Image (spheres, helix red, strand yellow):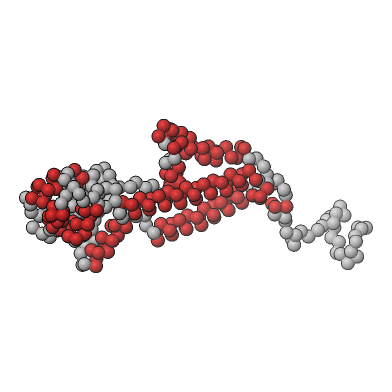
Length: 290
């Protein structure tokens, strides 16, 4: 006879062994968190979770790429010394790090190989150095501290790099290439013209190339050293078609007071009459002029 605590419990025997058969259909098996130090099976449980997270991240990334296409700049011009090179946003922190004394100059090898390689080497060694089974971040002070310090350093260096870039643009009076291209495209569409294709713009012809303002005054002032012998642009911007974007008064101001670090002021080197002569001639340099 079977012994039981509940007199109303129905006892089912298996064969003649008198072994009580129990019903496990309503019993929920415990999850893996009930077993400290244990983890779930890599295949298929863990792999399936990782795959689903990867799919969500990929879809979000593709959505951002479609919504905000990467801006493309003008074709590279090695003669344009006013261009400020900038990497993509996710490399700004490394770009800023390489500006510091112990990562550049005589220490350039340390900056390129050492500082850039340390994070990747640390990631490779992390599974071997941190073998603790605790998964809660506040129970892993060393790993958590290193992660927080790394995120703070990346955030700070990215902010400093971008702020310095904005300061350089403001000091030089420059507009980033992709923004300048967008402005030109909007102006062209507004005026009923086709959108300009970078690198394939039609160069305006020089108007009155034998004018003394160009052959004598600008040559003596060494303007062609930066703007080119044919105003096609050398280390400075091209001046062909400059009359379409700047008025005579604006040209007088720029020649007199300079602009940024690239354009020096000619006040004192040229007389007011010479400056006015150059500004008048440059204002005639328009794309449709003959």
